[in-house]
Structures are given as C-alpha cells and as structure tokens.
Length: 225
Image (cartoon, rainbow, N blue to C red):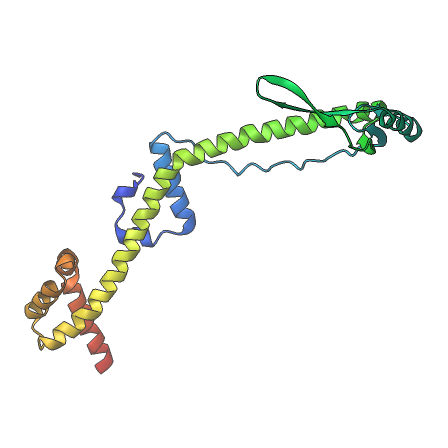
C-alpha cells in the first residue's frame, strides 16, 4: 500500500483528516525530507535553592567577621580615621575627591558554613547535571522544531487553502441556485452568468456546476415529496 504524500491529497481528503492524522502527515513529510521526529518537550528540572545556614558580618566591604562584636570594633576603628574619596577619569586612574563622609556600616550577610557546604556539594552537582542535560535536550528540541517549521507551515497552509476553497464552493453553490432561477432553469445561461460575475472562480464553476445542478434538482424533488 502506497503512503500518500501531501501533494497527493485532494482538498476533500485533507478536510477529512483528524488532528492526529494531520500530525502524522507532518511527521511523514519530515521523514521524506530527512528531518528528525519531534520528541516530547523537555521539562525543565526544578531548581532547589539550598539556603545558607549561618550569618557573617561585613564591614563596608573591608572584610567579613564571625562575630558582630569584632565587626563593630573594626567599623568604629575605621570610622575614627580620616578617610578620603577617590574618582577615576581622564589620563589618571585615581584622583582624590575630598574627605569621605560615608558611614562605616556593619551588615549581616547570609553564608554557608564549611560543613553545610560540604553536605550540599553533592546535591548541587546533581542539580547542575540535571540542568545541563535539560539545556542540551532543549537545544536539540529547538533545532528539530526549527527544521520542521517550514514543512509544518506548508501542511497547515494547504489545509487552510482547502478550507477556503470549501467555503467558496458553498458560496458558489448558493449563488448557482439563484442564477438557475434567474435563467429560468437554463443551465448554460446560468453558468455563463456565474462565470461572468466571478471570472476568478471559473475553474471551480466548471468543475462543480453540474453537481450543483443535480443537488438542486434533488433538493427540489425531496421538498415536493
């Protein structure tokens, strides 16, 4: 049994395809073009942020201390000296810009103790490995998806054309009934009316007009019965 390609489908056949069959048709066209099948979208692993377990004290960027008391002593000592401000610019790297009036502050900084960091090192490595694997899988997924985009758009465009043609055929069929009535049942006159009014749809009218006439006659007979 021959496997049908996109160009071998009629518009009527395309309109009968289910969503799953359309996806299969896209896969088939990709297979013919050497494009890989698209796997499931990679799921980004949850990033578990391991929280610090201790606090240290920073003295205005000078250094860190374990105790607030020690940090306060250093801050008070630094504040007791005359400090200067500097700026950068021009051909020099540093220029004195006057006496510094900035407070010497002690700030609390969250940190990891050595023992705690050693315990979470393995977990961090696992998290990093999972993220790396995800990024690689996502990059591959995006690459395949990009390769499939033109083929997917081609299939969907042909489906869209088939739907538009179907809508036009329905419109023309309704008009055919009116033109046949105007032509008092003379098929050729009615057909000429339609072609003159819609020259761009001449091919559709030529292809379907007789079918429309038969359908109209059948409808009338059913109504009479």
